[in-house]
Length: 216
Image (cartoon, rainbow, N blue to C red):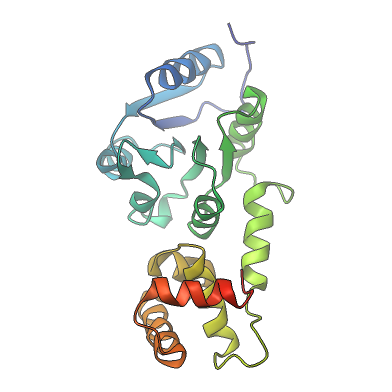
């Protein structure tokens, strides 16, 4: 059994995870810690509807639910809800970390981490705190904001280099826009300029160019 932990408030928590053992463990943790899990969903398509129905303060989600991309669903969440998203995942590659950072998630925790790491994140999220500056997401976000340098002979502007580096990390146009604070339409324009200037046919070829030129 988990140690009894009292949070500073009783937040409403939405759990999105399709692993039965993980789901059962987190539901047990919630009961032991006086937290309220308002819904336990197992499909990416259920995330937004469940948020609209239950209005949780915190979402704990996997990166992927079955074959579905759970992070992509976060693009559709109303930002005015101030939802704190804790990514609790076994898919911890750099692309997923970068995407979670761009989408403004509160914390990114690997499932191999001690349970106390998740508890601490829940405490902080429930208290309305900001993402700790030492967390993986905070350091990633700082790094992404500093992107923009390219090879000296690069035909790209600094902003285009920033966009290309985000593309090479696997981010969608909407995620790039959120990361850089620009509109999706502006991102699309930059991507088209990048493809034209580099004389490549698609984003994959542009990403390969960025990797070959040491931009990532």
